[in-house]
Length: 369
Image (cartoon, rainbow, N blue to C red):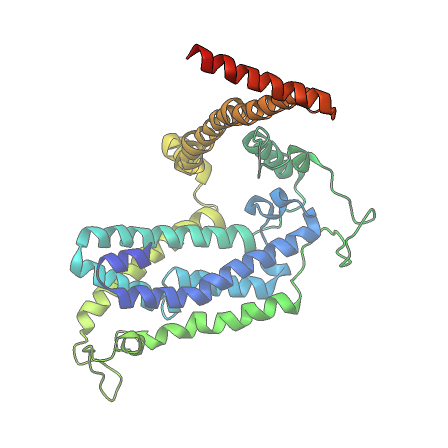
């Protein structure tokens, strides 16, 4: 969203810079998620419902320190906390957008706070607190929810409800080819999975320094030859750089991010604010968010069911008209062949009779006309 907003504001350099910084910390966050799933499967089995729900996680920092640390680095970067990479690219986009459209800047500004809140919510629910992977009450709740949401889904790509209710083998019953035993505690991923995380953590912190407002070497690099670029002094500071403007814009974006982080701390780390109580007070908004703005339901009605109805109608046309014409042609050919085969009996006398009849017919027709 920030990248597209930058394009709309004419700050394509800022948009590309944000894309470049995202290439590191966003990739690291996805790989960290895979590492968490891998560690959880050692406890809950290869059940996609259990292994990917944060309500069954918690306390993973104790068992997966490398994954937790690198995920925290990526979280700080995507939240725009200085000096992590995401701060420099996000701040440049917000600054450029403010000059073009303060209304769009306000949208990006609020989004920065929301991003900080939900990212630290994810971090706290996954890596802090007590481990909940063996809580049978939560498992039953997840199983019920998934059956309600997916159990009635049929067709290609629909989850098999039997997967959700299957009893996965315990440690002493089975293990896979990788000696992946089930246990009561998760485990850190192997070096083949954690090494890429550690490598990506370095540019997630440092790569933003190539595009600071003091000296934007990234923008100078992507500019076409011949296009005017701001000069950079020997100290690496652009002569057009203004500290007051930078501190105002950067301070506001960091401030809204800290507000989001603080709310996440109070709700999911210190438990001083009950999210369930807030959800009860704003049920319509909560349900709208819980159901993803009902986009999936609208898509189901407008496109999936509509496409299936259209497919059935096309199938009827294909069966009754297209196949009917083909079958009719075959039937006519069959009947014609059955009728004509009696004219080919291999007897010369019969062929002579046909010729005589044909000549007689021509004579009669000629005589009449």
